[in-house]
Length: 220
Image (cartoon, helix red, strand yellow):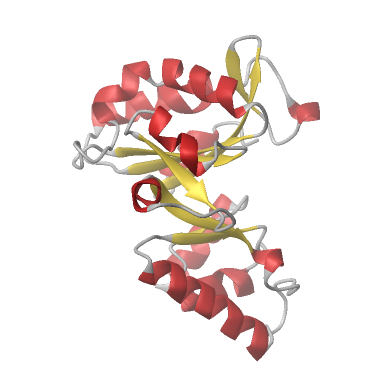
């Protein structure tokens, strides 16, 4: 975890931020794995409060907050709804499309049949493994797929033409369905970032915020 994960990303100009969370003693704690859990690393202190403070100063800034639930989605979502209360006036929904914050739920999430049980400002990340009806598909905020599901490329040299073609078809298919797409577990290298941009992916995941920032400036 970065010491200031929210500001590290937002101050670099990024518009999508991911937080891995565990429900612990009535609070959502941010950690990559159980061994990393620390009681001081709350979602509220590391992300929600800084986000609120940022919006007070600049309400035009649009941010997607991807909450990756690591276990017990029912409890985690219950806690999240409580912790989002101070931010509700900023949350994007079908009836409030000018609001700057989009909440996306990833990781261990409810099946599509349960999407209707949650407020309209809660959207869901999808991995294309379960069927959706039209109303359920409207609650999908983006599609996230494992890069390793389609390619074993390690982000060095050139990717094979076959793998690149497979990835391109996936990206085009998701775009044709009206959704944005990202690949998780993609190599975190310059060659991979460049490939993802060429494919037309909408978000690039990274733990190397300064390096990706420099790359994007150079690429432009």
